[in-house]
Amino acid sequence: MPDPAKNKELVRQVIEQIYNQGNLQMIDQLISPQHTGFDVGDPFYQSHEPTYQHNTDGIKQFVFIVHTLVPDIHYTIDDIMAEGDNVLLRWTARGTLTGNAASISGTGQPVEVMGMSRITVGSDGTCNRLETFSNLQEVAGQLGLS
Image (cartoon, rainbow, N blue to C red; front, side, top):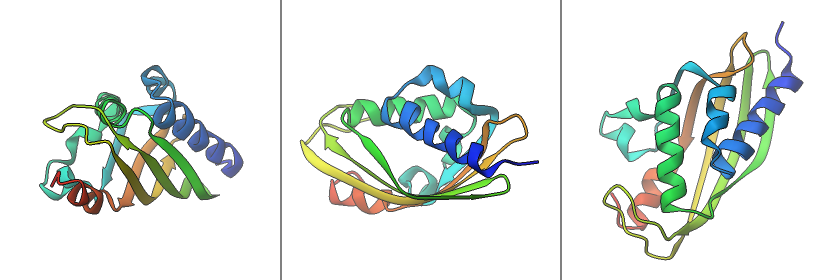
């Protein structure tokens, strides 16, 4: 039977250890190898190429690129709730675009991305699905990246 309190703690660990600290080794412990995920606000998703966020290798690539571009990135959980095996959260990520990667050059501009995510926790206690709705496309446009 799902434990909503444990599921919320798992998601907090994912945000802190993977997304804030960029600890790629924790991905294999906290994320299912069969993970699927997408962000409908992501320019890659808009161009029908969302596969980079599927499975643990895709998440490692995503986190590496984000931390390369925005080394001071910090995700804040604004609201979190859980029911059954689903955890819903509203979050804000802030940082400064100072790095260079994927044909993007650091501009020194501040970045703020807001979103809502639904994470499904599998019976093995790992995150196995992530659905995100963010304003990443808008932010990319403001930075001249889209």
